[in-house]
Image (tube, rainbow over all chains, first blue to last red; front, side, top):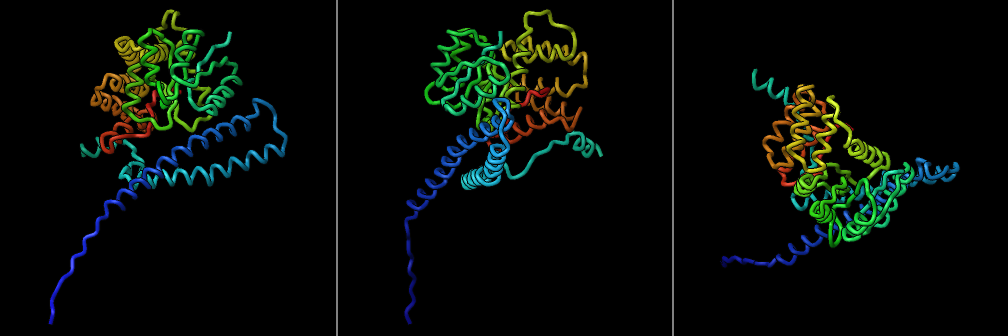
Length: 111
Length: 227
């Protein structure tokens, strides 16, 4: 009967580095995407408020649809990507909302 | 004559949006694509308000603001930022910029904050009236002008007139933050919340300090209240 053990060491530094690069890339891409998207959104607001000129019904319909698509898909996707980048980098601060109810805390402390 | 507003932002689209939102409100707009160009515009034109992007290549918004103050240019400044991080916010507040606008911008938000700042600085040569809101406005103006001692006096007077004002305590918290006394800032924000637990500006400022303490940074901008 033969007894033995095999130990396999694998250097994963490269993979870890690649993972880090990916996380940074996701974060950079999301931020870079958010700048033009925010700009487009404000442009849409300015057109829709009709202070620079009235829109005809077709123009209005097209712009409203564009705004909806922007809000529902693109912005959500970018925010998801940003959340992912934050989770991966350990910055998970926006997982919950803080609400300071100091009067209630004081009441509780006195009770 | 309409007020002239300077926009300093390296993004052409952002400048176009800001210009359109402000021109439709009747303001005259001057654009600059960099901090250096902004400084030149401030020397060439009579500017009522400067809107500065905090992140720009070369001379960024904070450096421009520091340069303005160094050159005794006392034009009020508003900071536009994609994410308001506290070290930058505190630096900006020390340089007299207490008004922050966070991206994504909305035309109505921009117009209302611009109108408030211009109103705050429009009547500064008039004799101050002894009402609560006059002292609150004067305190904000003094914060803009970095007259922190005077700001404190106006807040004390406002609190004499209304000792139960969440807005005055919130502003006292902002002043304490400018002076880097974060414990006092928390105490004042806490007092504002105690007086009115649904007062969002104090909630937001407290949240920001809490997040900085626990996570090292925050995306909450400084909230002066009263808008």
